[in-house]
Length: 402
Image (cartoon, rainbow, N blue to C red; front, side, top):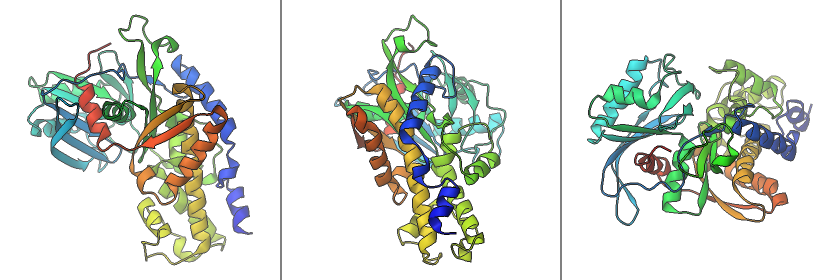
């Protein structure tokens, strides 16, 4: 058997994915999600792009991401810029071992206290939260292999306020993609979509409230940001390796698209494909063991000398990275089409190491996204704004409930 047959037999080639067909399914599921149906949550943020932060008043910002927890003190200046100080970074609590509810929120509270300004907090929370009108939210479920089993079903903001005590006056909870968009938009108003593309994937855009049947009819603002939780889409063909990774994950029934393309899982997917190809004699035996995604990226960029040169192994990795980029591009194109008018230009901010650092991914993503949007005459520019999630959390800390 040759390599091409191997890639197509296991549904690893990007050509196995009907991009326009999957995009059509995705758009249908997004519409259902806005009405509280379907398999894409389409979570209302109750935050709008015209949120304006206070000037000169400090707040604490926390970015609880898929891999790391980042914490800082933030202050907005008269010119609209956001000054950060006391920056801290650590492993996301719950990723290094299981924690109790009290241990988890106690850890967040300790970091908030270290900023010296826990009175007003913006918490960027990269997990499936059912947002509430008061800018708190109920944690629905974990993803990205965080283990705090007694936290789902409880309010995130109120739990943090309780852990901090009387010093804390307010906690605004928002999703990572919403935070990225709010932060980037405050720096550049032309940016109207926010994409997280790293450990996991999510994207947000602003939707008119009248197009969201599941929200209240008496909201004070005409539009709000929708956190799509787009990784929940389940419309792409699955390889045997996708199925294996999904089965071995903590929540096998959830986030199937995310597990087919995002950084937390792509290294395992490529490793499994390498192992299968090695067993079939298509590549060397050195590829019969697991490799991390950074190691794979370095190997393709010729920065890793541990693995021997093997044309077949590189072809598998490059092909699967392209496939992941195509999946991510379809997931991105849906919200772009929802948030942009045909014939227009739009700008998307991207946060996440996968887009920036994974060898070959960024170029494939741009190419696939451009192809998907071409029939609609939409041109989507990509921007990167440093610390956009932290800045967005700071903006949200000053938001008023809708």
